[in-house]
Image (cartoon, rainbow, N blue to C red; front, side):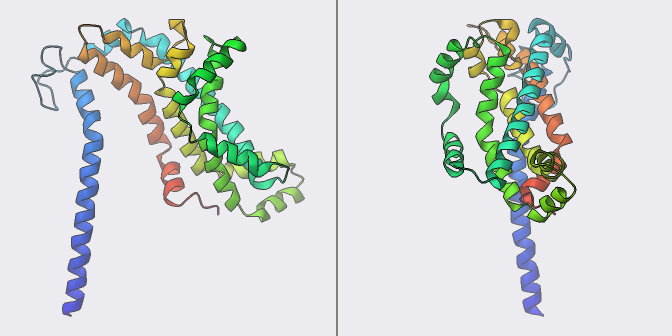
Length: 282
């Protein structure tokens, strides 16, 4: 009896400690977002004087001024276009490459896969010079196509690794059944592999969408024309040499964060399934 009570008390204590730790981590992650939203509703004079999360007065006009003065409309559409184009390109190319690495047998397969994996260790900043020279020679610098191709290249290695790991676990019986029904290799990839890979594809989509949406330095390197630049560049409008308009900057950051938050919420079910279950097929 005492042993049962001891183990129950121990289990309760351990669970309490774990939940308190997770709650603390959750609060530290959410607090900057809450502070950003709160600051976007304050004025330049009160943003550092009023330390409360809930402002005494709400200034929703900050969002209007941020959208109009920062030219957010054009930049916002640019970022949406770049994100959608890059994510679609990465999903198609990486899924086909991952399926080929997993299922096809060809000379140099392992060497090519190792090269792709080695690229994961090179930060994007380490390839700036090479990208700049290459885009200049191809006459793709200061073009939307050049930026999209660069961002697709940035996300390929990680996406191929995630998808290949999933396809390696996919039962071959499913492919055999598809072949009996007359499916080609492309048909199996499209009708069998991709539908089963939804959890991993959700992770790939969110990771790459977040990467493209938040990209700033590469955009400044590639683009000279401001109308072609993504949303993150527009945020610099409110950061002057001597004065930074913090409420408008926070309003702009909130606008920039909303699409990614919405995307994550829409795909949360698949992401959790892919992460917690390791994208097990079945």
